Amino acid sequence: MAGILCLVPTPIGNLGDISIRCKKALEDADFIAAEDTRVTLKLLNHLEIKKPLISYYEHNKQVSGPKIVERILAGETCVLVSDAGSPAISDPGEDLVRLCAEAGITVTAIPGPCAAITALSISGLPTGRFCFEGFLSVNKKSRQEHLSSLLHETRTMIFYEAPHKLQSTLQDMAAAFGADRRISLCRELTKLHEQVVRMTLGEAVSYYEANPPRGEFVLIVEGAKEEEKKELTIEDAVQLVARQIESGVSKKDAVKAVSKETGLAKNTLYDAVLKQLG
Image (cartoon, rainbow, N blue to C red; front, side, top):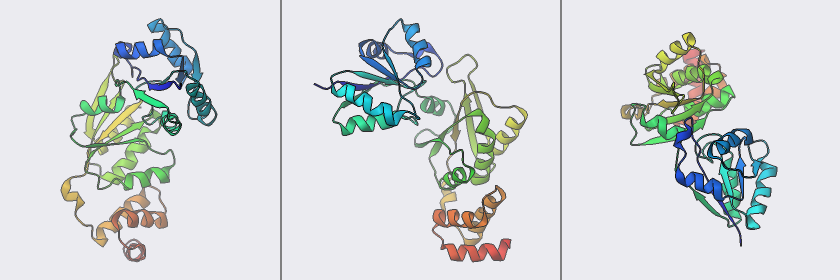
């Protein structure tokens, strides 16, 4: 009889957030699949639990995933954890869940800590409707295309970002959404020095130029106003192209991205850009 895969969330900063159910699931597991076994070992030591650990992360998932599935099919129970928060959310665990689902393995999840929801709840921005966008690409062009596709998104948007990429991301967001769009930047969540900074994108760019960012960030970005969803004129579209060109995108790629987003004919938009921008 096959075993199960159990997704267990781990604290995002405060070890006191581990639940009784999570602790029992770790104790009952035959083995634990961990993003970084060293990080998970610290948690297990804190809980006084000893269990076999297997490494499962982005760069070994193609090899490690099938081995885990094979063990579960043989009757073992596997607990999947990430370094912090809920596994399978912006995390290679989603691939293991898919493999198990395809193999007919029962997958269960215990609710618990999640940086995205924690940050959203204290952001001061609307929480009724939101979308999770995860990490933006390190490739500047891909990042700008991603943000451009969200130009008319009215829901509150949630992003994860590393400190060394924060400035470039904020600059691209300001170019895509406008410097006056509100943002809440959350870091060190649940820890002693938890910080939530609420300001506009333009203010955030200036703030972090003067205060180098440290720690992992959750960015909560205000959605577009309903009136911003009105049909764009060709002049509006040309200005969107101009913004992308100013941030480093080629004219051809900027026209292509804005054409796709607005539905305007690419040739018509390109002719207008040549007339107005040269």
